Length: 202
Ligand code: HEC
Image (cartoon, rainbow, N blue to C red; front, top):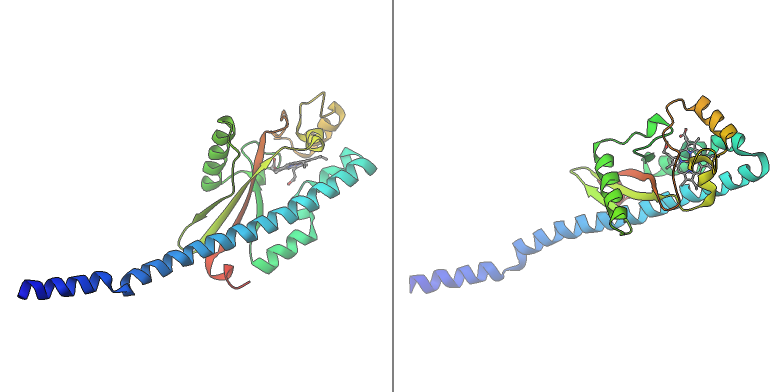
């Protein structure tokens, strides 16, 4: 009788939604935060990429490579500054073959770059990735070299990238390591870190 009574309570405990629900809620929260990080990261990186590509195209056509060299830097764009301010974030690019040494990857970014490179080598399309830690949601997105325009400054020296332009690049970036690329190569990643508690607010 006592055993049946205990079993009855045990069943009630298992069936009571309370505890399970709480666990489910935390999961949903994390899932929701991840979705928000993907949506905001996609939006921010797309705006930055579009600003950059359209300005580069315009300046390369109208004023030439030397002048356009100033415009492959995300910090050259007021719209990127505004997004950084609104979301209290830093919009960053990182690469394993940098032109600007400031774009050297940290440990987490380095691991993502390696993963994306492995994906490409296996013939997969690398995808957006979110890594959550206690306070932050880190957004990563591959930057694939997909336009002929990019080769004018990141392609093969002497053919895509004219020697005279490479000379200017070397003067500005003596440690440049961002040439020799082909279309389809991984050029780097977008890296945006959101504070979890701010993600759901704006
Ligand atoms: C007019 C020359 C020029 C063109 C065209 C150009 N870039 Fe760049 N790229 C640069 C310069 C200069 C830097 C370093 C900017 C800085 O100081 O932050 C750079 C840096 C980068 C970086 C950051 C990593 C690093 O090496 O420091 C990425 C990613 C990148 N370029 C991708 C692209 C892509 C993709 C395209 C085509 C849409 C492109 N670039 C077209 C000149 C160019």
